[in-house]
Length: 207
Image 1: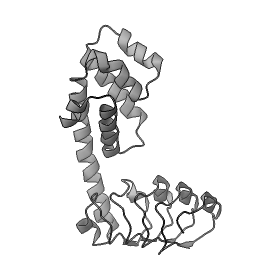
Image 2 (image 1 turned 90 degrees about the vertical axis):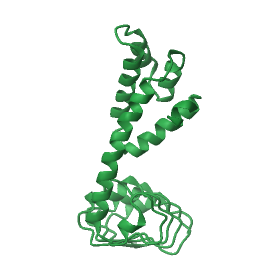
Image 3 (image 1 turned 120 degrees about the horizontal axis):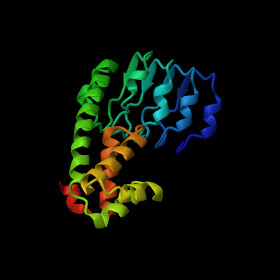
Image 4 (image 1 turned 45 degrees about the vertical axis):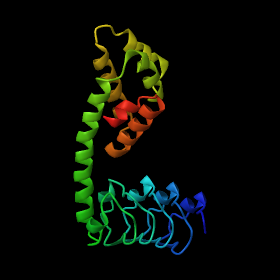
């Protein structure tokens, strides 16, 4: 198997799912609909990212994702409170590193992810300040467009003469941050770097 059908989400009474030893690159977002799932075995595939909905499986007790291509785990793993048996061996994990996951203890993994999010949150705030103090007026509108602000929001910021440019940009970034709360701080940082690259402000990505 190279792909699972989205219709999988209709099997809402399913308790065990074994999709190991295939060529899967992802688990569909619809997995979150399997509210009674107790065991998910997906070892020895090519899965490189977990769907956000996975952490809504509150009945899940056994999760085997060993031998895949996972680099990072979702921050809200703590919602899997029934999880007893967990295996992430054989993945090129960075967040958290493989050493943290080897003990197969959910508490240890969750604590690491929480501290990583806290650290990334502080880094994100520093990045917002660096950007706000270095974006020129010429790049301001283009930058806001790449952050997917609508024209009314951009005009409102441009017309607010009482704010200096740095404060306007910081205001725009804080607004963007609040609109993207579903993202982790690390994902926000990644998006900001991509936006800076798209707008030609490579000097800021270096900073």
